[in-house]
Length: 351
Image 1 (cartoon, one colour):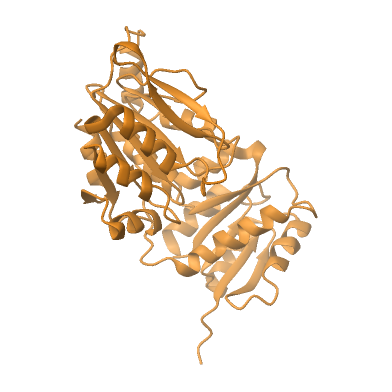
Image 2 (cartoon, one colour):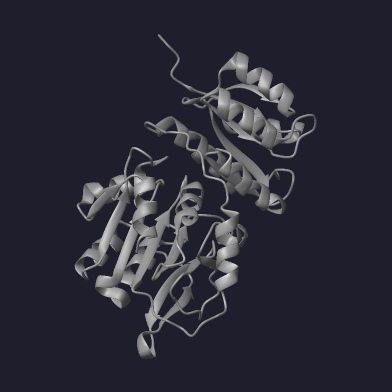
């Protein structure tokens, strides 16, 4: 009988980290650690001979760094890559996601500590995700439109507040960073929308992610701090450890609020919480977008958006890296439009 276990290759220049990650899967019925590599060159040889389904990858390695390795692997082999990186390397994490890595796990320091139980659980969860993924597709992200950034800077003079015609609330998880980078690269300076993002991501990474989105095109993107106004051509990313809501102010103002997650929030940041607040304030001007991700975050919030006259868009399984979140919303009957990622980007670009 053919062995159906997931084949895992562990790539890290630290022998200690290689051992710790491999031990997570000792005796696991669904995962077999088929090899370990200390640098990119060794990993490339092993990928060719062992044919792993998934790799855990450290980015800073001797001989061949993680970026060079990723470029080669993404062009030659079908394996999925999960980056395991320290907080200090968060800028590099997003470069890796743009090169095709599936997701990342954040470790507090360069080495995985003996007490890092949560980190071990996260590595286990994200490796097992590959086992359950159906029709996952590698997707290239278009290069940064430098001209678009220049256009935005030339016209960015902090005009008086203008309420947006549409408030777009986006929920995403695994695969979301690359999808959002693609969407933001298509946004236009003529847009009359404001965009609020709830991306499932660890704290300390969301600010760097907002900065990368900001470089993508016409919208001014920042990590939300609370108290900002949702204005036209502005976008805000919810901090990783909090939830984002909006409230109605005077003269049609829409003010951002950061709130602590409650025990009822199964995911943080919560797409459900964001969608519900946008629905109540923006009503028929609200647009909820559910992108790729594990779980079912966004379903109940999308139900409230529909009840208040707003529009709900879900990413099609054709482009979603993980069809959990959009698939759950479609199954629940709370979606108005099912679009591929390029179609979503175009839809939002023309608002």
